[in-house]
Image (cartoon, rainbow, N blue to C red; front, side, top):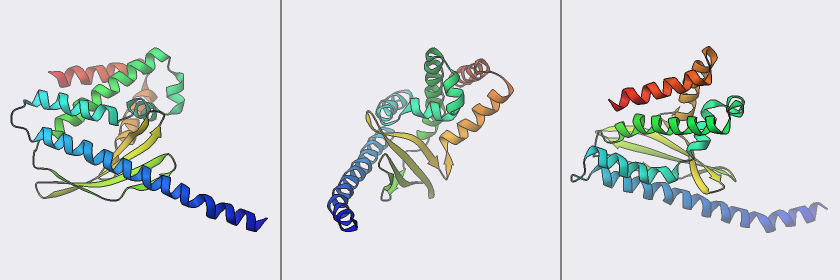
Length: 198
């Protein structure tokens, strides 16, 4: 029996490893190509800041699983309490907040360079891609967390200098929910959006 198990392991392991390597390379190339496109837009002199932000979001949107990110920031318990309409409303507000918070920062400089480290396969459905952004002499570590969604590999979280976007928002949102209701959270997100748009 042990010999049979051993033979099965020898037979299937190379196949599994080959698939992992293929997936790993695909994800590495995916984040590199998208980042290169974003950097090329940031460096363009013929575009306004508004045009740059629009183009950057068009590149980034298909790469991120915003619905999963939104769900993770609320936690399973709170997410399950929402109606389909509330989930859509929350996800839309969450995406808007992400755009306003991070796109404002991404266009500050145009001299960034990115160093990529080998991707790390965490499981058959999760791959992490570590990188370092070099800007004005500073080295900032950025970790992209991908999962294999039904629509392909998508980012479900990003860590900047070890600080997770999802965990940061979860802490903020859960603090609001502990003191109030989901409507209070909606109002807070909408208030932030209107304040930032001014």
